Length: 390
Image 1 (cartoon, rainbow, N blue to C red):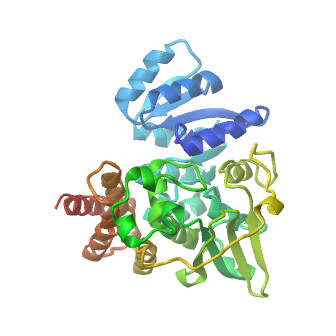
Image 2: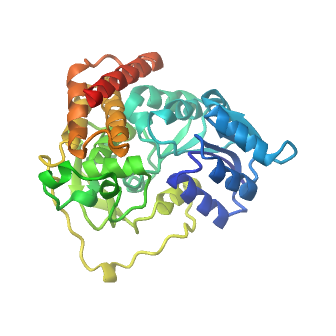
C-alpha cells in the first residue's frame, strides 16, 4: 500500500489519478489531497477517499472545506502554500503526483524532490522555470523522478532502466522526437487564428485538458515547454530534441538511437495511461483506458510544425538557448498572456507577441537560487502584464 500525495487533486490530472486509485484500492492510499480553491470537488474527494490531510492554498476556501467536513471527521484541513510544502514531506507519503498547473506548483515539487520522494511530475513548469535547481534537488534528495506528461512519459518508457537526469546520449540516444497533435488550429490560417475565441482554443480535438494547457496546445507553446522539460529530464541539448506533428495522437513520442533503431510508445489519448505507468513503475497495472485498435485507426500521419503560424515553439527554443532565467521569463509571460486571453483581455494572436516582447526585454540571469528564479518570474509577470494593458 503506497501513500499518495495528490497535488492538483481537483483538476484533470487529479481526476485521472483518482480513477486509477479507485481501480486499485489495495495498492494506494490517498494521504494528502491538495488544490487551490475548489471546495465542492475537494469535499467529494475527501468523502470518497478520506485522506488524513487536505490542503487548499486559498485560506478562505480551506475554512469553507473545514466547516463542511466538520471537526470529527477523518480529514484535517490545512491552508496555504507553506502547508503544501510541509505535507509532501510527511513520512506517510511515498509518492507525490505533482499536478498543479504553472508556477504555483514549483515550490511543492521542489520540496518533494528534496525529501527523496518518488515524484510523478505533470507540472512541467517546475523544470521550465528552475530546471537546474530542480534536478539538483532530485539528486541531493535521492528522489525518483517519473514524468507523466504523455510525451515525456512516452520517451521515458522507451528508455529501459533509465533514471531521469542521466545523459541519455550515454545510452546511445541520438534524438528525441516529441509528437504534437497540432491542436484545434492545425489547419486554420493565421488570420483566422488571430481572433479565435477561448472556446475555440480550448476545443482540443484529441485530449480533454484544463483551459490553460488547452490554450498552450493551441499555440504550440505546450510543445515548446516540453522541449525545455525534455532537455532537463534526459540531459540532452536542444539540437537533439525535435517536434513532429502527429494529428492522431496515437504515437506519444519516439526515441531514436545511434544504430538507427527508433522506439515509440503508442496508446489511446488518455492521461490515465501515463499516470498508471508512473504509479506502478517499474511494474504495470490496468489504467481503465480503452485499448488501442490500430486496424480501426488505419493510418498514422506525421508532418513538420508550421513555425510561422505557431511562433511560440521557436520562442521556447530561444529561451532554452538563452539559459539561466530565460525559460523562467518565457513561462511567466506565457501564463500572464494566456490568462488575459481566457479572460477576454487579449486577442489570441497577441499571445506570442507578449511572450516575445517580454523575453527580448528582460536579460537572462543565472538561475542559481530559488530567490533569483522567483524574482525573474515576478519581473516577467509585471512586464507582460503592462504589455497586455498597453
